[in-house]
Length: 137
Image (cartoon, rainbow, N blue to C red; front, side, top):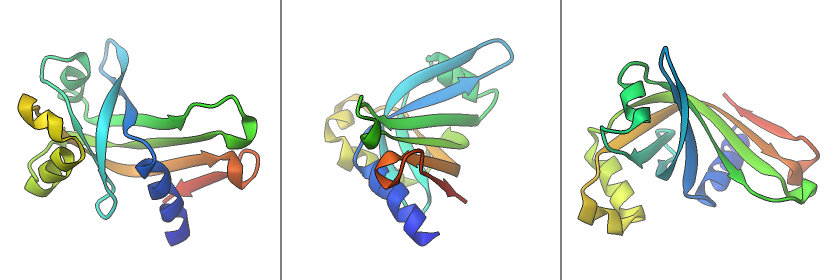
């Protein structure tokens, strides 16, 4: 399992944008967000303002799904990560430091930070074999 998490973490560190899927009783939504990742806690830190559709939705339902992908047309190089978790306002100073260390220019905007606590990962990595999946937990 530790080897699986290393593969997942390695993929996450190769990228910096995730797609976040949210919903409420009326609408399903998806958006793209820059992220910083803290592997020990399995946490993505993202920035978004209160006046967005997705933040309005998570205030009603904080269960989310998302993905990170490598865009390629080469079948043997396809990689993508699906995840699920819970999102909440960030209250951890260390997570804030991580985000602003990753994206120092964001400090000028003083964005509101959110934390996605991941409870499921599924990495597809065709470099390990066609359709090879790594699932955590």
